[in-house]
Structure formats: structure tokens, C-alpha cells
Length: 360
Image 1 (cartoon, rainbow, N blue to C red):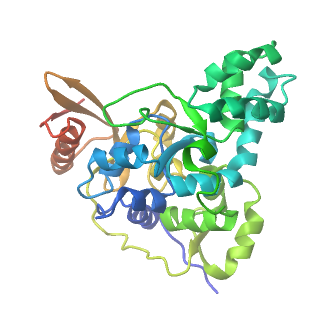
Image 2 (cartoon, helix red, strand yellow):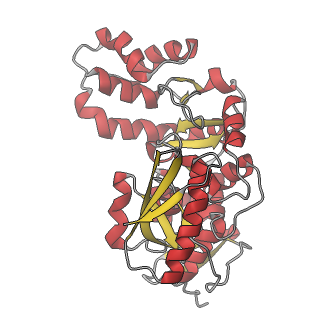
């Protein structure tokens, strides 16, 4: 049987549709976090913009409530990066990701932590975090005498990963700041707050939110290995396509494939949004020449579904200014549409106070 080929525009529209960026959804925050399998969140306030761009009528207070009531948390997960997740997903996914997370610590810090047994480090650090929220560096200072040759900063970095931790408020609350204090997942959420997820279910959920996608895309998004065997077990549930490069793309049978000519409005994405970072081949949404902008934490503007500009924001004189830096020339219509969406974003960031948009 011949396999349907999907061009970049078709994949682009599929991504926007499944990432809830083609049309804002009338859904609660918890539903968005569940569907998207979390939002990348190493910058504490960036997920608020990610949710604003996806949810109709999103108000920051909704996410604040989720965090304060421990129904949403910020924790290391995919790719050993901080993600904003539902409490159920954090508890259910962390055991699955633990081996990968520890391996990344060994690969990144192994040469600087010679003589440090990571299992011993975890065993020594866990009770201190369990007592109450502490920063990893503070715990590392308390343990440093056991490994005098190890830099405290690196011990803290390792502790943040080898012990399953969550960052606690006020870190991550709208309009507030605080140290990156952490406590154990069990102390914050309870010992049996959710059933464990297996790799197959994580792959299914990735495809619902990011598909169609190649195995390499799943691996880059998750950081997990051993995916070929999992994919083979899932074959009866999957349909396959080919992209323009001839790569096999996987999808769940029955998932909607939107019209490639679907009109989409401009969207402002926060730094490190997985709509861009969640793929090995990101050409469906960003040109290769701009791919590395994400390393510096660039925030993107999508026009016709593709990265066409970066943006920053600043506050002064009682208003927020959203500054747009185009990566290509804009038509007058594109400029007007971006300005209108940018003004709405400025008002959101300014808690309802009208703001303005500037172009460089």
C-alpha cells in the first residue's frame, strides 16, 4: 500500500491544531496542561503567556490557584528541563523519567563529581528536602563535607535531579517571585497521588498533542530511549505517513488532520515553548536558519503558523510595551494583525491596563 506524504504546511496545521494554537480553546488550565503533557517552565512566568495564547479568557489567577492548591507543579521532567504539569502527571511520569534524568546528570556533571555516588547523594539529600522546602544549593552546602572535592554548585545541580523534587510557591506565581525552593514530590503531593504511566501511554499522549511525528521527534521531546520497541507494540493503534524527507511519521488512528489551507491568526509564544522545541525536525514551524534562537530563550511570533519574528516585553510609565523584531518583511496586513494581537498581549501582561506594540 502507498503511504501518504505530508508536506510541511500540512504538518504545520496539524501542529497548530493539536497544540491549541489554531483556535483558542474554551477549556480549563488543567485540561490544557493534561493535553499538552505540560508546558516548559524554566522561566517561571512564561507558561502564563503559553496558556493565554491557547485558552479563551485565560486569567492568571486560574493557574495561581492550581499551583497554590498543589493541583499543578513545576518539576524536572522531559529533557531534564523544568515543566509545568498537573500534579497527577508529575507523580505518574516521574518514575518513568527518573533513569533518563540520572543518566543526564552523569553525562553533564560526571567529570566534575568524581567520587560522588549519585545513589548516596540522593539518599543523603532526600530527608533534608522532605523536611521542608530548601534550595538544592542550600542542601548541597550542608552535605558538602561528605564530598569535599565536589563543587557545591554541581552537587546542588545533581541533587535537583537525583531526588524527585517539585518547586514550590511563591516561585512561579503571577506577579510574584521567590527562590527556587524545592521539596520532595511525596511531601508536596502525597505518596500515592497518581498511578504510574508507562512509556506507551506517554507516546500516545505525545502524538495526540504533537503528531504526526517521527520516532526521533518523540525522543527529542522526551529524552527517553528504547522507543523503537514501544512503537512496534503500538503499531495496531497507529497510522503512518511520510514527510518530505521520506521519514516515517506516526500518528494515532482517528486523529483529525486539519485542512492545510486552514487560516490561522498570529500567535505569541513564550520562551522555550514545546510547540517549537518538541521536535527533532522543527521545519514544520521554524526555518532552520532561526532554529538556534531558542537556545537564547527567544520568544516567537507565529504568522501564518510559522516563526516570523521574536518579541520582548517591558514595563514603564504604567504600561507594558511588546516589542516585535521581524525575521522577515511583513505585509501591511500582517503588521496590522500582529499589532492587534500584540496589544492584547500587552494588556494581558499589564493585568488589563492597555499597552502598546513597537516594531524594530
